[in-house]
Amino acid sequence: MTPLASIPLNDPRVAVLGALHVERRAHIIRFSRLPAWTRTQSPEPAFDLMAAMTSGVRLAFATTSSIVELDIIETGLQFAGEARREATVELYAGDHCDARSLTAGHTIVVDEAKVAFVAGRSTTLRFELAAGAKRVVIWLPQSACCEISGLRLDQTALLEQTSSEARVWAHYGSSISHGMEAAGPSRSWPALAARAAGVELVNLGLAGQCHLDGFVARTLRDGAFDLISLKLGANVVSLDTFRRRTFANAVHSFLDTIREGCPTTPLLVISPIFCPLIEDEPGPVRRIPGGTYLREARPHAREDGALCMTDVREILSNVVERRRGGGDETLSLLDGLSLFGAADASSLPDRIHPDAEGHETIAKRMVEGAFGKGCAFGEV
Image (tube, rainbow, N blue to C red):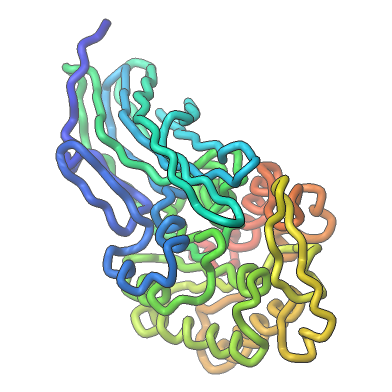
């Protein structure tokens, strides 16, 4: 067996992509997709959990090693009475992908009455690679938090830093962008779209937590991003967090903050995809045993300004139109129904979240509608 050598986890030749806060020491790496300073403004523990999940986070390096070993412990999520959400690591060596499931780590178990933590153990993943030099990219699970405690390569292998001239795309959204239902971490719709368009992804899709928080706007304002997109409205309706009057103002304020630091950066607002539960009736919705959702009936809620998806699309269209009329020429709107409409509803098994096929559908249409020639993110 080829002898292996441990690589210090703070070795700068091993790049961490897609995380805006990385705690790196010689024997451990921890991640958050938002900067550390945002923790002091976090509204609830569920937000911190979603930010710590490694959707779009990956390790990248160049090597001649024929073996990569990774010691990793995941913290997965389980709803009581259901299977734990699958956590997968995908290693790309060139275009070849090798996927491995993680099952031994910690588990957070959620039911209606309490949240329990079940301790687990780390897993060693061993990947065998073809001979010769190659770029290795390791995509960490989109549905779990991760700590890495070991990385080993062939003892005599070369290890080099890999660089990219690609544009950096930051995307903010809800669980649909977070992508827990995708077939793997590189197969959420933002990850698929980024790979197809040749851009580097920072995925700020935060399941249940896309509520126009000011600290997220400041993160986008201050980041080194070439492209920014905002997929807004799904959580606003499903959790009933804004009314018609306050939502429009919150979107304007969020955009104002981003434009303070990025006055000409291409900025794309994406309205909600099709959601049969709350298309024409307001939320909130709640999860029920078995993994589906019900809408709470409120017959007169819209009269009081509560929002449904059609309302949100109208408001977002109006906001973008008015701002473009005021001179913001690099602000654009993409109708979410053009990404995933009523004809695609069979890919909504829980009536809210696209399945793996749905993620592929959205990604394909996103590349065409956002990155194509003449589109918001199309190359000049």
